[in-house]
Length: 324
Ligand code: SAH
View (spheres, rainbow, N blue to C red):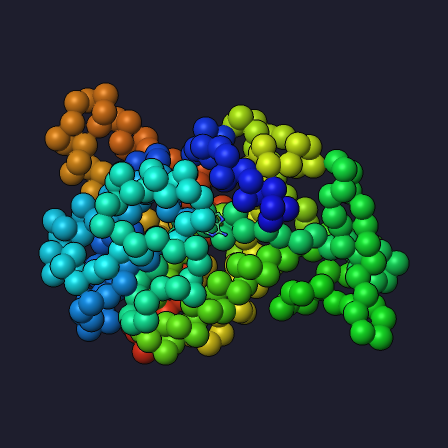
């Protein structure tokens, strides 16, 4: 699956298949930028400071964030250094057009040391998952081979093995468990880093707040739900993010949330900022801006299924948007 998804991101414009919050309204990236500015103040205004984004897509959120930071927090704008973690050469080119003064990385390990603020929207859900199925009191791993699912018993030293999952395991025959070790590794390494060097990392993604067993693997091809097993590399594959597993992996630092995206963005001023921007626009554009903000925040749209989690230095006060 890892290989299928890497091939997909390298060869396709993923935004032809789905849309994401920063592409829905510029105010999304703007309020994330203001969140970073407020958190930087709470950190004691370190200078220099890294502003990192993982999986920046078209670079829209970072461009919007930097514009808002430049207007509202010029001292933060002067102190920050932009670092983008992106594997796709095509997307790097799009990002460079919008965020020219960034440095690019294949992974977190090459980021320079120091305090940082990190943003990641729909990044972790793009990382490869493994699927396990409960069979006859043990576990099998489910693979895709030649367009069909095959099940291979999970064995470790001395017999049956446990899937790599930090929480309790489901026990029903046929129950499906998904794990995402790369996402847990990202959470663990960022927790160590911010605990030692200072900072906070903000993840926005979709998934339940508590681990829920079940098959959440989805494929989108040309914007329509598709068979995840067919034609590897031609569809975007995503799975619901397991926030409980992520929080468990980040135990070296303080974990805030997950909170639903709607109240989080509202607390950061999504609607006030949208209203101010709308007043300067034509009636049609103003209405579109308000509708876009509602799409991100309303519970039956993206406001509840999407969650926000923050991994922060333990001495940092509760970050903005997580107070409730
Ligand atoms: N944050 C953007 C894009 C989300 S799509 C938005 O909200 O619009 C996922 C992004 O993660 C893409 O930029 C993709 O190329 C990148 N990505 C996927 N796997 C990655 C990996 N292993 N390392 C770095 N970036 C990756």
